[in-house]
Image (cartoon, rainbow, N blue to C red; front, side, top):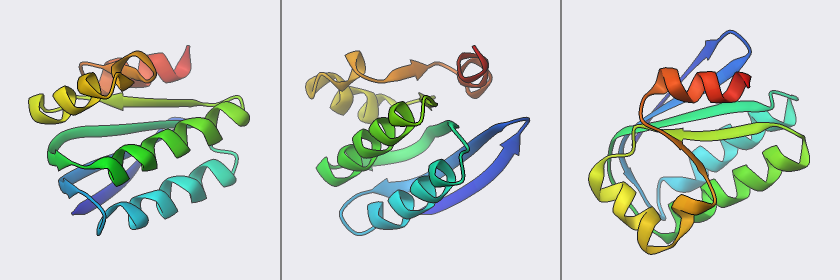
Length: 112
């Protein structure tokens, strides 16, 4: 999986490409955790190019959400591909996370 990071104002945006699974989630967990640890409390993850996510990928996002909340920050997921969105819905995590249709909408939510 490819992970691209970019800064948009005071928001750290991660754009993922590939499969988020047991093998790839530790790298993402480390990168997101580093940003939250630097007091960058606004994180957006764009999932438009993620074709698959397993339980370890979901756990990575749950952990990141918890860390962001403890730091009074924002953690928002954007542009979930249909297969990924259905995994969130089955796990009932679509009610737990802030989900945005576009990266721009996610950034607006992060600033609010």
